[in-house]
Length: 259
Image (tube, rainbow, N blue to C red; front, side, top):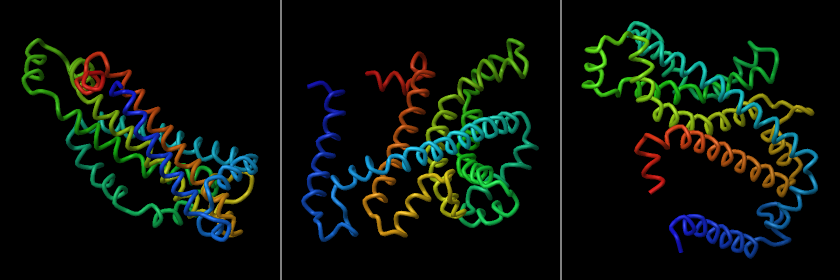
């Protein structure tokens, strides 16, 4: 059997073993503590009219926050790479945002921003912003000094150096930051919604989990958690595919993956 087939088959076998053990361990008396996989999937089907829109709301919020993090984080990294003064002025505050728990920032943002979806987007953006910024700066600083001296020797200007050397060097670092930020944006969106306690038709999966817990509907809570995990996996796979197709023709990491 080929390594690619084994790489797919082994996790599937492990998942089957976990589901089988879960089904054996659960029982009718433990529905409120540990519902069976069958009851979780049944809740997923029965309550899809609620869970489907909630999944889309959470995914949309995550993708908007990730897009803003890519644009602003990448743009600031390019700006910092051109000026140490800018880096010294901005980077410490970016670190402060990174190390401050989002649950502590959430009440202030929710007070300052009256529109709840906008406030949730800002909170998710704050969580996803720093990995892209830090990875891109590191990539821009990782260009080979010999190549940098050579391109300057040939008379390349700042824009040419940035476009032909620094950006290609930083691209794998930037894409790694995007893959990390994708999961963090989802986490930030969920935590922000928990903090906001937003209810109604525009509620995402986080509120549905909270609602199911309040009503002791454990199968529904597990179904919402399953959709959250599936959303995170989809974002991770999607950003990974983008990184692969952008680097497969020239970067060593993609070449090693193909081999």
